[in-house]
Image (cartoon, rainbow, N blue to C red):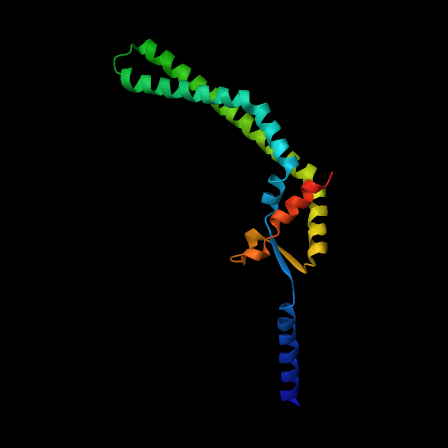
Length: 167
């Protein structure tokens, strides 16, 4: 009797494994699917346009910081105390400006990314559901959660295409 119970338990345990072979599994990269959509690309383009002036200011400040640092390095020994103090103060002010502007840009990018995600989330969800239904998938897994998957399992491009087809 005990052997029969063990045999039944083993058979039940393996029946799930055998059935798992019948599953149709898809792999997706949510971030790639979202960012490759035409709407996300347009939103990213607008975000880049709106931050271009600040990006230029940041690069200019970076150049000024390098120039001032190099000036202190090369001429610091021959500068008067007042001139050295003035240059150090200017360097500190430019560092503060640079840090503030960099943080401002970083916040704008994060806000823009969050806006893209919240704006496109419903469309993304519908596209995933559509691809799952059309492809008869039993299981869809995030690519980042996997160690390996065969090439034919990736449905990211299909999700992006479905998003692009939606109005």
